[in-house]
Length: 561
Image 1 (cartoon, helix red, strand yellow):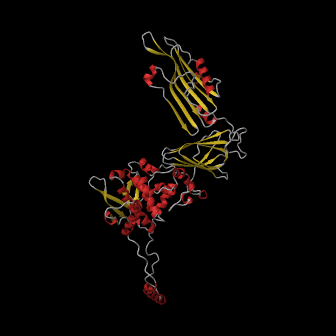
Image 2: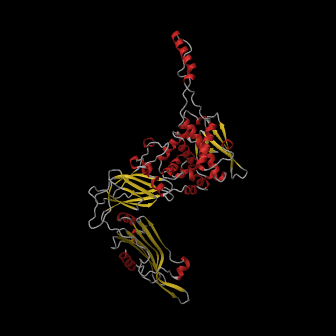
């Protein structure tokens, strides 16, 4: 069974006027009134000669056939035997149907059920049931309901069998049918209602939507992607993610997907949802959350995959000592535009530097790219990966160091690991990951020492092993300072803070053994926006991981940053 129309369809159908409210009384009519009534009757009898009869409205059967022809032409699909044979119409005396789908309960104004062949890989006919709620007072709503239901028939035909059809999510089954009704019927209250639901809930992931996914298909159309041309591939796909991929959304689609929720008409279609049955911003009533940047508050805005984030960004609380807000795009698509008369209009820039000081944020002796900004609209499209934007307050003239690799950071630690360790961990692994202006470089199991043979003829290693070396680049000094404080700490009583770099921690540990003392050390240092860490272990008798040896190594690392 296919759910037909959600409560939006029912709530939009006006109730019929109660009969008899203005009827004439049967008694007490005088002679003059009787004469007037006779005159009215005579005029009524002559009316057919003076005026044409009102045009006959199409029947429900006519509408089914009409929309089947229109939708089939758009899709390039033909129903076997034609719609008259393939689609049966049932007029139910019941007002509506209670259905339980997509984890919710709905009162449906119509319902579509289809039959399949014996192996259930092809639909052989469908039955559309219309309930009294589908008719109401507005012909637009009846047309919208029928257009919606007829498209369910084509959805079944485009899917590869019964199981695959019912494997599709409500966003595709109901959202696509609602968009079809909206595209074909101007004034469809159900489509208008679901457009409002979509535009009122940007953070809702697409796959969690049902009929309100009309907005996704509407945005496809406004972005230059014809949904009619993508429907077949979407319904042939076997999962939500595959159907989304089959929609073949473009960069233009992703760039505008979140920003249209702002409904800024003066800025054009990039910032405003448009199309048939789209309600006004006042009707939608979206309240955009505010994000304020301060010296201590560094917002990290996260948007779920297949969802959108909209924010009003304010720099009013930023102090004069740190007037620059660095906006870094880490994942997804981002648009930022000022609303206070300034001229910021950024699209997918990995880094945007905003100046909150009305006097400017110039930096003597350095080229600066600071844009004046007080408040504005920030839109983030999650897309497949989700969205992530980090905003940090910083000084205008702070020096930012470039990213640094972990390889070669520890002097004389060779990448090839000793034979004994290599047999366990393989070749020394390393990784480089970059997010916008942030990056991390990690090396594991570096070694410094020699291979030798003991008295029993076994190969042994004498030296020091770097279990891990990590270098992180932050987009600002403030964020690096915060990141340094988040480093997992050992007991405070065992940590020293040597005067190395701008801040540093050093932890050492010694363990006696028959062959000599074994030392281990873990250290971290920050230089401007770079944080480096390492953990080393020495073989018995080796002192490079001792307090003095580890401190010397920390100084050498700092000099290379």
